Length: 113
Image 1 (cartoon, rainbow, N blue to C red):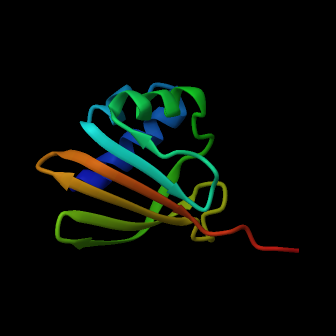
Image 2 (cartoon, rainbow, N blue to C red):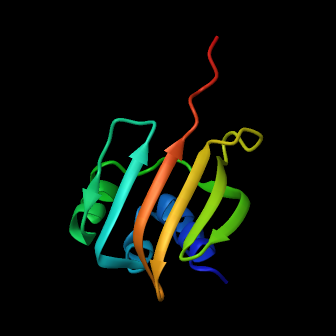
């Protein structure tokens, strides 16, 4: 099982339970998390990432719709479960061994009227 797959499973469990601790265990202390397409972040260091999930927890689970690996980076398209037929963006996880060192989450703009 890839680190990305484990991350998504633990993310979804955190959404259901409100406990993101198991997901956060996969991040290196010096990890960074950045969002593209929404006005939030960046978050540098494990403590800042933990605060982000505590202060603004996600409200929907996600599913991976495609996955590829580029060296030490996993890239996965994702869809929110409430809109399973719409690609919501990409997750880019850069890893060092068994830990995430960088997570970039991109968001595709909502369709207009």
